[in-house]
Amino acid sequence: MHSYKLVKKTSSQACFLLIGFQIIPNLEDLYLESKDASALLKSLCPQDFYYKLKVLNLYCFHGAHATFPIDLLPRFPKLEKLIAGCSEFKELLPSRLDVMEKHARVLSSIRHLELDSLRCLEHLWKSNSQLDQALQTLETLRVQDCGSLIYLAPSRVSFQNLTSLYVRDCKRLVKLVTSTTAKSLAQLTRMSIKDCGMVTEIVANEGEGIKDEIVFSKLEILELHLLPSLTSFCSEKHSFDFPSLVEVTVEQCPEMKFFSNEALSTPKLRRVKLTEEDKKGSWVGNLNTTIQQLSAQTVSTDQSFQFLQTMK
Image 1 (spheres, one colour):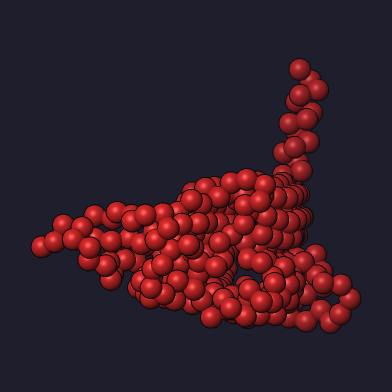
Image 2 (cartoon, rainbow, N blue to C red; image 1 turned 90 degrees about the vertical axis):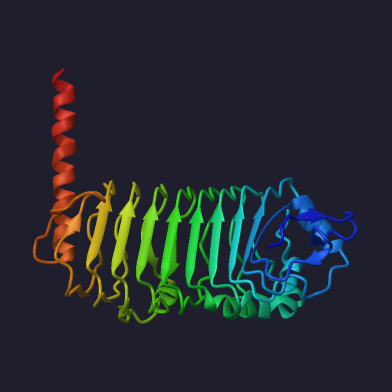
């Protein structure tokens, strides 16, 4: 059995070789920092050198001019998972048409996207029809500690294959998705939104128009934690159908007065949990009434606490 070790050639070539100068044909997971990515872009490696790579980790791209190295992606035609962290990108993917025409095929192979500690990130990408279509293949999206993120995706984007959405600690995010994007989430099974202090609602309206039904066909688990500004799941006059929803957690969302304004169907739901560990939960006939009662209880508790404070 061969002993494997990754070593670099000169910075001008930056090809990874095995001891004995054997090419690594089965490398599936690669970690790159800024200097590594720059060297790889300048390298003379064959285009299919990383043909089997499935997971790319990009970290430590710092400085005022830090940009996501999108020109690297064609080197990884089988890429399935992209992870970016601890970097200062202002946008993840550029919307220039020349770039997108070149890289759309590679982007369409990505199934899993994870973004962590990108504190300058203002948006993942701007509205671009090619980008919107290329990223329809995403199955999981995790966004964490992106304190400058203004919106998750352009208003008309479709996440028709997304099964898991996890957003945490995004301080400037106000609304999660538009009603158009929400209608595309037919495959979503789990949504978890935590510690986003400015989020006021999950599904936002796009202005005047028909307020038709939004169906989350496969959503089973909905988690809303530490959202101090959240007032509702959706304040507009859309009706909602959650035929598969069995678990809802609403924890430390003191401003949430109701779930939605119009007809709401949750035929399998029988409780709302107040914490992840809550086994009993609360239920008052339907989801909207339950949220309203929990809100009333929160107000009553706050008033009692304030009264006790004045008596000291």
